Image (cartoon, rainbow, N blue to C red; front, side):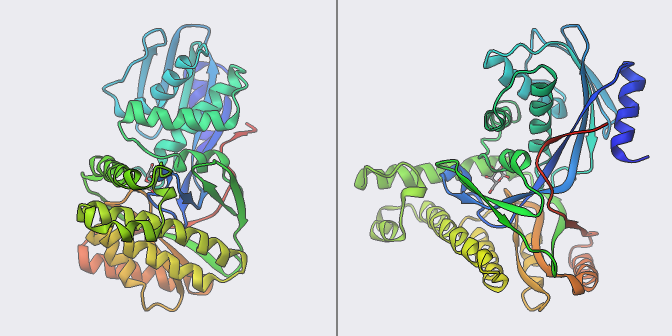
Length: 385
Ligand code: GLA
């Protein structure tokens, strides 16, 4: 039985009714890291690592849920939604709280959900959960909330119930992904463009370090504060500066001495990363994957040395590819401190690539590297059961 069928079968057996079924994907990000909360540019895509939701109203005031992968169940009174001890439930409760705060009535419902997005691998399993539930409830209860507002609610659920002040990229990518396309999002104007990904001769390969250093969420919030400190400093000279998006290399260089050196490096990384996203998109338009790959390496270099969100495992995996002819580009992906690297690899060398990487990683860290070939799929959608 495949995953969707298992979840539907589970739902019918537990709740004795027919569900609506929703699919919600994880994401990759080709380039543009730690730029979203600085009102910059990102270039993510939704991938075939997905979570499925079977849900239906239950004519009560209770939310009953079964987490298929964890084999755990729980019940919550919808009149008293609050953070739970169960960390997995918070991504769901956070969404419900957002809907309630916006004035939507969330009536009782039953849910079974589960999928194959590895947790803690930086593929945004939490965004997929948030977007899938927001989309599902919007459908089941007929709220008619515009898709972009669902994205914002999913993001706020992460802020308030998971305690990470994330940007909008992950939730946006999960909801707005398009098959065979990356989406360039301007995180200030929220305008976006789809870029076709010609994957005839290449594949996006993720190398999962299998590590997640505990610093990840506290350092994430610290980076945001460091960026804000840089903006505050420059605002004194340039009142038109509201975010690092408004900052040029020249502005930074001119005031370098006034900066705390750490804050300077953080800001410099972000300003250059935004420039790289634009250059990478131009390269993509011209079918120039060589230049695109170079931008990926440069992005990693900045994340490693200036933004300092990488870790030895990620650096090793990226370094390992530097003289592999079959790899066009590689970089750490997502928040950092573990998770995956993203690699652009020639199709005809795929097997050799994964074998070499697995062997090298095992030898160096004694850990079994996992690799995934990411296919680019559509964003959150209904599934015909
Ligand atoms: C995490 C956050 C995103 C983004 C990335 C870094 O995935 O959820 O909003 O900031 O880190 O690019």
